[in-house]
Image (cartoon, rainbow, N blue to C red):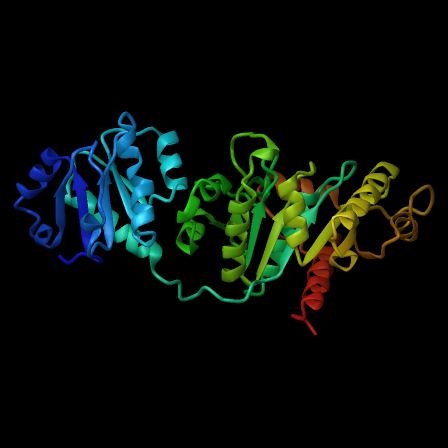
Length: 381
């Protein structure tokens, strides 16, 4: 058995002695085993030739906790695996955010060391499918007084993916997100895993979080637990979305109703904003206010597309599409006709509406919206 990279282990003498006594791990002959007390300082000579470092720390010993930053200053390129006697979830997340590559338990075992080394090197391996160019980023934005954004985002993503196109949907409605429910999925991991990954976030991490739908759509699900909207780390979210834009042909974001600094940042980064409105005064009033806000923060109006949702075929008493355009001072890209009955049946079963009724007017309108976006990005002539 050969290690994937030169390994150095720095730990208290009793842990080093236990490893050297293990005669079932001949590959340890190639490992640099350095006994060092928790209060002792790591020197550059300790790191000479190291490809991966396993270092013991103890939260109760501040000097040992400073080892992480010390190693980073001496060798910023060196992956660090922390060895702990015990750790709670909060501590592990903190360590990962600080740039630690992995965490192993004490006493050290050769199996766990080998597994950690392999995991670290696999996560740092170049991704052959990663692209230098960024895929179009589409934000689906809702306004107070309108609804149906998640249904539209999931159907749009699935429609774009149905032709074999790589599509990833981020459910960023972190308080009430239900994209997984609409798609009939039960994700094991979610957006929180990406936000908590710190510098460990990479293509391998992204692929371990996405949940694949039968249509081909990849979903990054919203968190299970409700948290404050302001808790999102904007920089970390940007990294996650950028990774997806290098791996997929389209990336969609289902944004929350509430506006925050991070959601405005993501709107500003989007190549297209699909703003959903309805044919009522409350929705149009809020949409106009949001259009004004977007303009004030420098978002180009040509990136914004107005989509009127739940359009009813009524002759009298309704606000028409021309009225919507006049009220917003903005052209309407697409109208999505109401199909409440079939949508209700589909969502009760975790299906998309075309799986319930192949000729659903809702599904036909989503197809038109998908084609309009393809034309916008030069992917449909």
